[in-house]
Image (cartoon, rainbow, N blue to C red; front, side):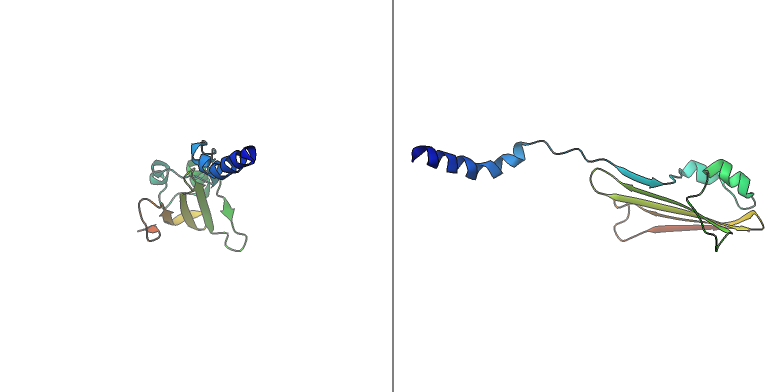
Length: 122
């Protein structure tokens, strides 16, 4: 009887030991093209497609129905489950860059949604 009681008490205390265990390692999940601000600053309207690829790399999305638009999309879920997203869209006209749209979402910087910036050709 005494052994059974001790076993029951140990089993009841076992869920409290969960806080003593180390947390499991969580990996960061990255997808897409990470575009640094310094690289984005090098891209200007008037550049050719080849020049844009040289600076930013091959775009993640090249839509067959919108051949004049390139999308560089980046997604990161860090180990704290915070999601960071960014998107850079380049618009071309006859293989010449006409407009750059950028959108970034970082949870610490903006709790309501996304920041948006647009630069257009003069």
